Image (cartoon, helix red, strand yellow):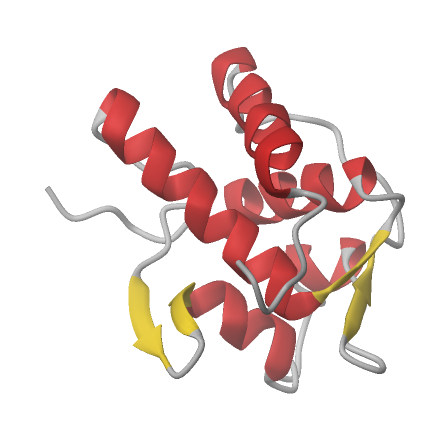
Length: 128
């Protein structure tokens, strides 16, 4: 089964992690936490939370479409869900600009986000 990337789901998960971290985080750490979230969801439920695909990079695996949302200049036209809630990177950080209503994530997925953050949220981005 091929999952289509759902930017809203990915943004909701990222926004929740940012909120748990005080609203700001190094984007490498955010990408890693989202990867760990999907890995655990795949192990438990057989499906990811973010619906992203994964690529191997020099500093380990990352969620590729989310990485593009963070690093690429947005296309002209209406603002994306991501950019309307999460800032462009500045000094390697991204920031939650405004909170999101949870529309896509289940309670179990929200609980898993909190569990992943509890397990890895204090770990340095390079150690992740």
